[in-house]
Length: 255
Image (cartoon, rainbow, N blue to C red; front, side, top):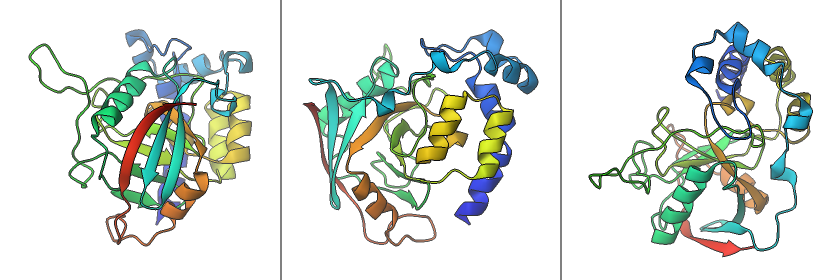
């Protein structure tokens, strides 16, 4: 079932991702003009992106003193590098929620082996959760996507899980897929993904069909074995673990 889902998504990559990624630069800005372009026009824009414009920061050494998220779970501990310079709102939101204790006691409500884990919903249903941001009236509000040529959905990526654009709240996912199929890699070539990115996906795996759709704001630097163990647990028909896997605490620490 999961393989069929991934395959069907990969068939749409050339159109969906080209449409979403065009216009994304180091400043994470997608203009209204870009959003009105046809998929064919977007692919032409993607062709202008060079490997020199892409810095795969997820594979750089984390600088000493940088803030990281230390996630304690009922199955082990995970350390996440954060990228405020590339996804400032998402990182600010995650840190604020973590420091407030929002995530403590929440479960991984969705686990799909060879794809991803998802958490951050107090209802445990995948339909709840709020951001740390408020409007002028003090009401909680979602926030927009942040795209960067420097952050991708490689295995180990941590990203926001919204219900639509502008609806980022508290839910987040962790990519666990270790193999990107040749068919998907071929579609990425057609969509004019940077070759550096395609090569890295082939090397480490990931979920490229999420690129240009969801905000990546972190990357697992320790505890990927824990992620793989969680991904392998027994799940029910709704892809929820039969035995709850819980986030017992998240602290923000200096690396």
